Amino acid sequence: MSDYVLIFQGGSMPETEEAQKAVMDAWTAWFTSIGGAVKDPGNPFTPGAAKTISADGAVSDGGLGAASGYTILSADSLDEAVTLAKDCPVLAGGASIAVHETFDVM
Image (tube, rainbow, N blue to C red; front, side):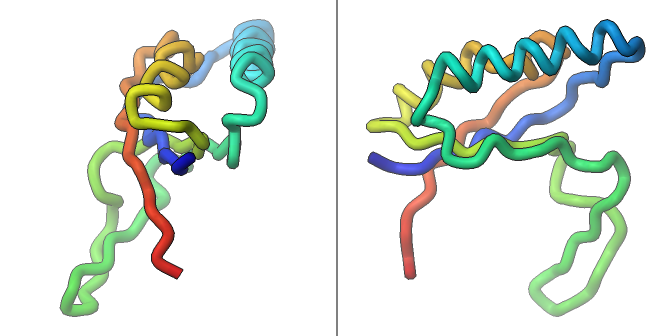
């Protein structure tokens, strides 16, 4: 079993309290449906609150790409992680998901 980081890009935040509740209910249902595969439910990223540090130590405003949040799952394969990610509620808000396998080095 390996860990997979789902990196969300784009999407939108619901504007009304009712829509926000519906989205949170969808996340709760998704997390419940995939159960033990959820290693870290993650969080959205604060728009515009990012810095990038280059190899020479220079710091610039902005992050790497347009990432808007993350979740970490455990799965038996990349294909299984992708299958689990296909039902993620972030997709309903117009976002896309990049799925990256991680590996232990320490």
